[in-house]
Amino acid sequence: MYSLCLYACVYLCTGNRKLLECDYVWKKLVDHYDKRGCIKTPTEFPPKDKQKSRQELLLERQERLERRYGDSYFTSGIGTTTFYEGPFD
Image (cartoon, rainbow, N blue to C red; front, top):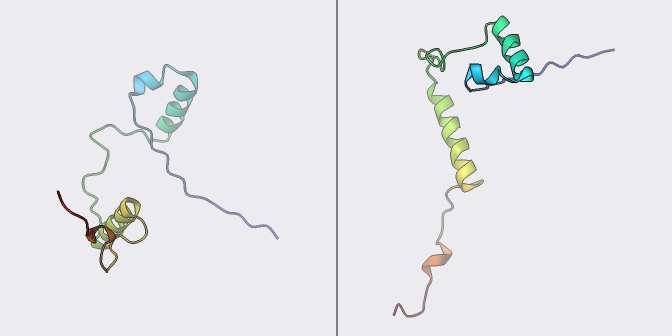
């Protein structure tokens, strides 16, 4: 019995097309994607008519906060830095 796993892959490369085509490997890559109609101009990307749902926006915000503050960005209780008992002078 054989199983086939397909992975979705997104490849996004931004840059000056003419400059990228100066290198042989990049030229082959640009030509490959150009034949398939995957090359977009700055006016075509990102699509203007695509709007994210509220759920997608909420999930993105939660991921951004978790990256910034760690697992929990709010912990109830008293902070440890507020218990300074020494003199202020």
